[in-house]
Length: 380
Image 1 (cartoon, helix red, strand yellow):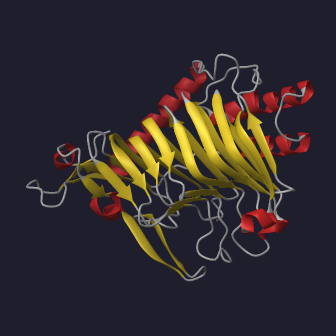
Image 2 (tube, rainbow, N blue to C red):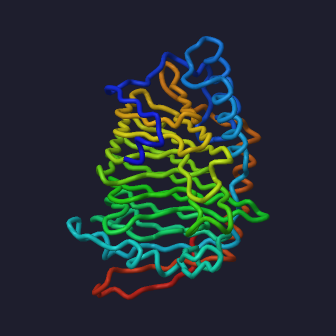
């Protein structure tokens, strides 16, 4: 197998990575910048000093500083926010399966051919600098998203907390970004009851061959109240600049999870940085097969939950896997200071003002539904 030829393969039994209280301080996870600068970096330094950290000194510090740099980036403010609301017809059939793209997303997502990379890609209507919010909080049933390859932004937020999301099935999905003067980060959030990954899932890949425009950075958040799973044939690939946030009761990934994967000729000359954050998983996290590196000096980091397990680890000889363990008592939030709250309030008011001016809400009902599609002003 190619994997065995190009990687130093380490077979090990189910190993718990719940290390002894490595994080000595508690700060709000919601502020990613503060989390990395006041928790992760001190934890790395403290871990190195006590010999409790997992990873080399240079690898841990290099990865941690890179993630702190990414975390300090202010979320991009969209020029326009599009909103889709699922109509009442989606609330009535818990055993029915829908195509999420055809049923809802396609009305506010455009697609076209990228001549530079010889591939098709997708973006929010009007451009990658816009945002799409999909309100499906009362929808039930199963929604499949299959074949949304090379989604290049802008931000996408899908709230379907009572429904099941199937990523894959007949084709895979990839969520990525374009690197330009704005250096935008694509943020994609799915909130569902259950999430299953049935095919390939790529994060921050280059479109097509990758010979053209570079990717910037992508943050994919999968949140499920019950569980997140992947099949044995599913593969999750994190390229340079990729972050995967997992929040659920339990996570069981049976397919290969590949951090620091390469895509184009010459990519092995540059280091790769990627992160998986499982700190919001309350139960067990199982990686059946974890691969780090691909003929490159990849630095991968896992912010672990209390019970994080790895079955088989394939580690490229120049790659590094850095693991940050939870403190005793777990990660905790603390109230923001008054100034932060005031700033957030002002930002929210400004955002609401702009949203009222620049966006509308489209209410979409299922096919063959007696209810008509409506377009109404946004209520913020």
